[in-house]
Length: 293
Length: 337
Image 1 (cartoon, rainbow over the protein chains, first blue to last red):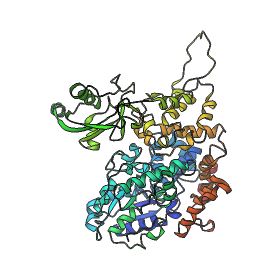
Image 2: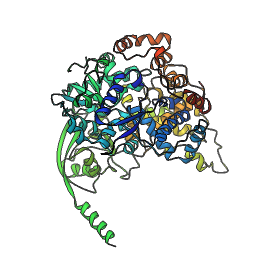
Image 3: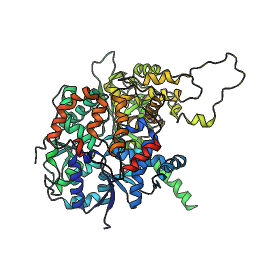
Image 4: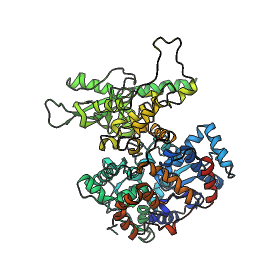
């Protein structure tokens, strides 16, 4: 098989509040023989808030990030759902609006760059599923997760809006009944747990300005997974992870019920099944203790 | 010629294909029931049938008491919107086979909001209409009593509405919005789309009044959780979240953004990127909340710190080629706060 190589857009949390996400990404890529070229020049994507303040600036900065992936001639791989949305949305808007693309390129030209539209943008979850293949993952599993009921938490920005999702994922999963993460759980030998909140919002983006709304959403998600008898949750999004892992106290108060479950990054789950060590996957960096290892 | 014949054959085959589907239908009568319940029907459905056909078949062949709203049958009146397996749809436009593709052959049919059910699939939409009225969904301006000519809008100006005027007020986005389900004050995606539609109209003379309404804390655009559910739910592709973003932009452009946690949270990203290329997570929280407000985050921050999840200011990473990012911020910024 042709060696897989991507331009890695880490986003900010991987370098700050979720170091375990960066560690597990690199550990899993190494196990799978996937080469990741880190885009060290990339800026923050604006996390769906910069565009509320200055939409054009957000477009220019995201187009610049993509331009660097294009210079490598590689597909950009993201490890954060919101980075995925902001970057893919930028690409979608520029690829469908020649005037806007020209306006953005006028700015990029000032620093000697050009957005061409030649690189695809996909989340690492979909790179693993679509390009590497679930069957091959299955063959490589050395420590199957068969003793665990695992609740997938998809994260909004990988699955909605579906027009972008369809551009980044060959499986064309439906936001109302997504299956990719369930399939990955099964490929890792685990039992995927079905619950209503798996494709719902964790509340992360409103945490500061609407703390009660955000806390209820987090609480509902963890409660849903607990009621479905999950042993732990898994998510491809570090922002969902931060909310579900670090904010369960506020969530419990908001919904009037004690809720808490260990939450793993998608990369950590795959890493465990492939035999990576707890240290390689950074499991000690979780606020809610990963109590089953 | 051959391919044309094949196509005809395929279409005929498709039309003949039928499938057994189990429908769990929400039933409730507020005059006689304390709690809702579900009736189950198993029917053969055909390729060309839409959900409304099934509701009609259940009502006409099985249970005449089943209540639901229907009118135009052409996806334009918006009254037949309901939920199937949690997905908001127009019953008259959604083909059964498309839904079976997503959810399989067991479909749960419910009103848009089970909380607001009056009878079966019929809900009380008062909250929807109240929110709609709240944003002044009409053009305001001095109009001559006997105008001598039409008040034409150029195609270029009409495009500024971004098809927000396609909204049929079906409520699909409104009853799919998780922020609204928790915070009843929140105006919600449908009314925000209407606020944008009239504020972006060149004939309107008081867009600022409307912007002030959607700029309020708790009820305004700032409480949007960015889940994109509204964009997905809309059967007319109005894309309400796009209009919510536009309203944010218009608030900043009109220079009426208040100095509060929500506005600073958006602006803080620009500050951080200008300094580091990346987001300084700790500083964003401090800047957004203020030196006093940030204290409420200390307990969680301490827990995160002990787990190695907080980068101290002097260790803050920076993007390579930061000068390039700073140059672009200088030349591409379009607003000030």
